[in-house]
Length: 270
Image 1 (tube, rainbow, N blue to C red):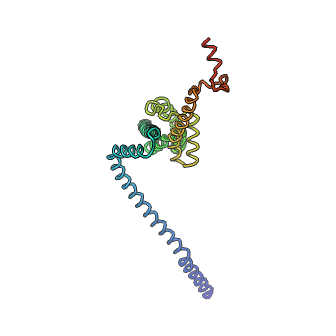
Image 2: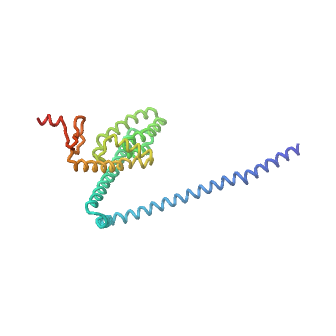
């Protein structure tokens, strides 16, 4: 028995020593490496944020000077009419991006505050957490409210099923209020995109670039849509053809000589 016990103790000691020397130290090294890498990434992130804030302040203070210098360089190297087109496109892009992003942030903040106030009054669970989720996801056009409502409703249902039903009704009413009153008042038609192209740009941007693509896909596609529309209208105007889409119905056509014919319009004029 003593021999058997000693053999078992020796084998256990050898196994333990081997585990400490190989697996444990290996895992400890991996853990320390990941921890060190995480600390370095966190420090670099904080440093980059501080640098970004400082640079942003300097840019904001000198934005008029930078704008004037950019226009001067543009007019120096390219023709005036081409420079005008570049400046026009740049200003239009700035208007679209600035109006859309600032408007969505304000709109989402209002929606988040309303959600927090109502949930606190009704005494629903997790009002602050859910209001933040609803507000942040509301920045994404079209799909954002649904993305935020699903996990929020699940949290409330897990805590109180009855309150979960009330929350779903409240979210539907809140999104109706946002879509029909708050959003149009703040955003208006800042992008100028039809509804189909809004959905298309969100799906394409989200599929290619994730959350950032879903957020910036609409204004980016709006700028491209405006550029293409401008080019098409210029081509039609040079051919002395109408530029409005309503003129190109199923009955209108272009003759071989390039003349535009709309039978319905001719009948009405007669």
